[in-house]
Every structure is written in structure tokens, then in C-alpha cells.
Length: 89
Image (tube, rainbow, N blue to C red; front, side, top):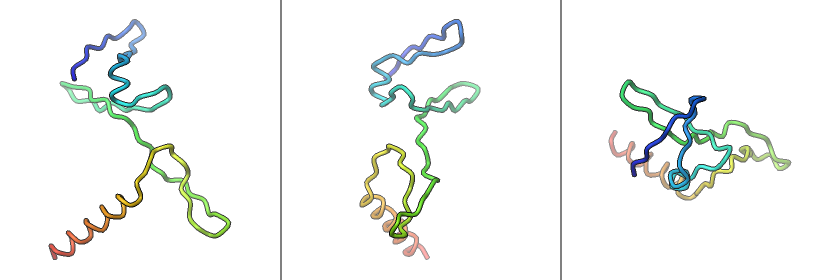
């Protein structure tokens, strides 16, 4: 998709509604811009879970980020990466 963006008098860029919908951007979502001499790339900034607490049972609990997570897929991905590295040795 290509979109033409216009910079207003205050230097701000408004993303068109269709672009926001496709990109999954809602008010309050942080984005970052990676800038090179010939382009600006806008990337949705996904928070990294760094804050933890201990539950009463002693389990480590990550702070909620609001990002859906598929724990099974994450475990499979890590398992496959470990197996791949083991085969390479």
C-alpha cells in the first residue's frame, strides 16, 4: 500500500484512517521512526516486558503489556532454535 502524507504547519503528520486500521494503530500506541538519508520508516513500538513481580505462590509474573502472546508458539520456537543449534555443532 502507498499513502501520501502531508506535514501540517506544526510539523506533524496525520496517518490516514485506512493506514491506521491496516497498521493496527489506535490513540496512545507508540511508534518509532527509523530515519536514513532517503527514507523514514515508521514502526509500531512494541513494549518489552521488563518489570516483574512475585506472586504469593512465588511464581515470577511479568507486568501486563496488553500484547497478546502465544506461549505454546514461543516454546516451540525456542525448542526448534535450540535443536537447530545442537545439530550445527
